Image (cartoon, rainbow, N blue to C red):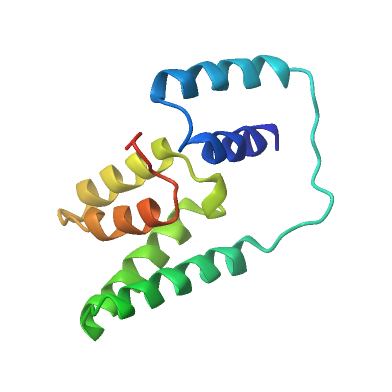
Length: 130
């Protein structure tokens, strides 16, 4: 739970800090929370939160004029990634994404990373670190 909290803080600071500052922030947060136990007050349904983000992203792509085939492909690739990652979007790290995309490409021989990356860039998960 502490790692999730630290990831959320980092994500909130992405637009304000450069990579070096983010790394220092991570060290400070890791040290500060080293002996802290954090529990969630109310469990949040990660699947529905993820689907809200996916639906919003798909709506944005429709407004941009993407074809129905592209929309279907976006939805499919993003949902498959979220199933494999098995985390709420706000808790997915850049390393999680890199590992997923590398594994997908190695296993399938196909590259679908650009569509998945666009979703995570849009959702604010990738920023400059990817």
